[in-house]
Length: 71
Image 1 (cartoon, rainbow, N blue to C red):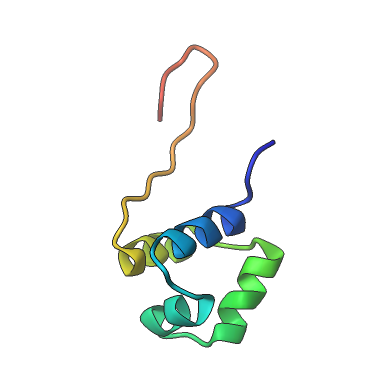
Image 2 (tube, one colour):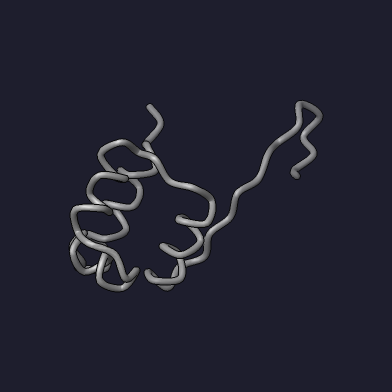
């Protein structure tokens, strides 16, 4: 079973002893706005980059070709 992006963010928040409200404050948005994005699991690449900076974690998006090449 694969975790959604929202589920992964919730795990990271738990490990960092943070709430969605804490993350929203670091992002300069409302808790409700972030909650809505998490409920819909609707994040842009820009959103995820900002979240990674706010959480002080590394973030990477890549595609893996059928021949194993990572792009």
